[in-house]
Picture 1 (tube, rainbow, N blue to C red):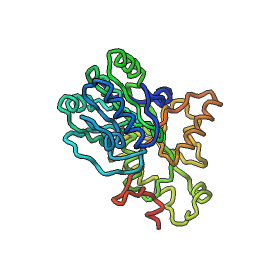
Picture 2 (picture 1 turned 135 degrees about the horizontal axis):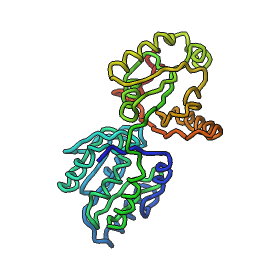
Picture 3 (picture 1 turned 30 degrees about the vertical axis):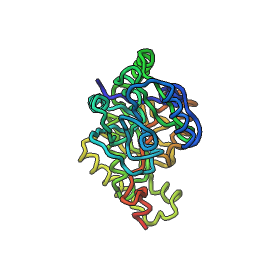
Picture 4 (picture 1 turned 180 degrees about the horizontal axis):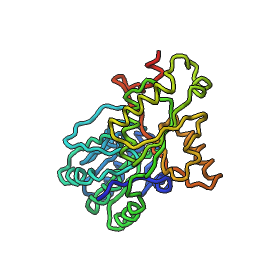
Length: 304
């Protein structure tokens, strides 16, 4: 089994519930599920996500310690753990999930658990239930059957199975901190080569209120090169004079690393690429790197 990477086309498809939904507020959803469970004879119940795993009854709980990607929550007890970055299904998760379902053990995911609904359906037995959250709407309940397994197998076959040849990221990268290092190191998981659009001094002065405190372009470029050399990631750095940069025009770039803050730029970049008849970039939206107080680590805080 190879690591699988999510494409924009699949992202849109998977936004729709995979089976029937129970909608409403927390208490209402719990009551609806309780009524459903009374009527159905089911096998094991597997919950995927922190909300479902903490609020609903289940034999196996799979969670990453976050709700809505960037809000940390208290961890539940677990005996198994594995690595699974956002927008992917790491090849190593299959063995752990199979073990968890067989032994009815909880699993902590270092990264993001959303897409693990898919391997859970493949690995579970007929009549088992997979339950996952629909943000701000309710939950989706999937009764495992041979029919749903075949549907999921077809979906899995649509995932990208190789790393992106070129992946792009843009930013100021002032006072390179753990959040930056996380972003750059994750690029190695997704791509063979990283293209960095680094804000010029002119752009910094135009867009940042505290621009006088920001390191020079030369300093920032030197620090980034040193770190990427250390993690052995092939790369090139382009000076940015606007938010679009090489991402909007490089025909051979395949994906873009984003956060919630920069997603709007990614949407704008893909709009321009469509106008230029270039292939859209796949979005990879990473969570914020949080400090011990659950606050986003930022260059602005470090400057202050």
